[in-house]
Image (cartoon, rainbow, N blue to C red; front, side):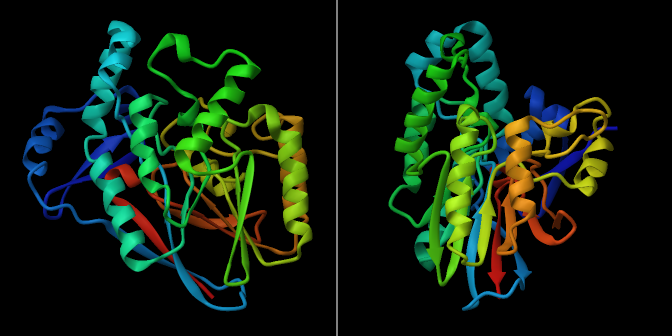
Amino acid sequence: MDRHWLLKFGAGARHRVTRRAFSSGFLSALICGALKADAVKPFALDVRTVRLSPGVPTPFSFVHFSDTHLTETTATELAAAGAEGRALHERRAKVLYRNARAFAAVLTRIRETGSFAVNTGDLLDYVSDGGLSAAAAQRGLDILTTPGNHETMALDPARKLKEKAMYAALGTRIEESFGCRLPVEARTVKGVRFVAFDNAGVSRYRMAEALEALKREFAAGLPTVLCCHFPLYSPEILARERKGNKTKPARAWMMIGEEVEGVAPRPKEKAIVDFLKAQKNLKAVLAGHLHGFWQGTFNGVVPMIVAPANYDGRALEINLA
């Protein structure tokens, strides 16, 4: 059985799309027809309010969004990608046809409210010059951003990541476009330290560096909110995702720090998860990747929130108290 997401078309209409359909780019005639009808309707951002009370100096609200999956691509890039890459782009663009408007809508909300915001990755569906240019629209706003696993993907075979140097070059492009710093970046808002940590792939060769940066951030002693693309391991998330996929390893959905279903964690990732488990000033974890809203805990104690997919026009407003 495949897990489903609700795609909304027009005023209140909803249609289910499976994870398999999202991943493959396949859509039914129903959704393709709805695309044309929805394109002319006003776009309204669907914002869900979440309240967290971990105990912070001054209560405040902020925006959390994730998984926009922008598909903008230049004509030059499409030509270089070949027939297979162009076909993939066309399929993905049909599935994700609301992504640019959803991204514009969440940026408008942030701009108009003057709100701080957290973006937990997969801003791009794949890395392209067109996508990086579109993503740069968030620069200048108060958005703390970390990349996702889709920021390691490409349409053009020549751009597929094969070695450490390519990851380093990609990281520089992501930093310039998104306005972020890798592998760890932090910001203090009303006495709370928000720490963005790339745990999804772009910084895969920088995990030792990331751990040292995290140690410095937590040593400050401020109440801290960790922001990352992959949720940290939760048996509840595993049970939920297993309903739709019986074969993927747990690390396809989460960052694991212990053996799960016979699969051992990567040593450097285990070191980071073990460190985070010991931090008394870790007050919440914000993540993305799953495309659906989820609220639970990390390590059975720390509140953890997974944002729904922004490509479907959704975002969270988190009230922190």
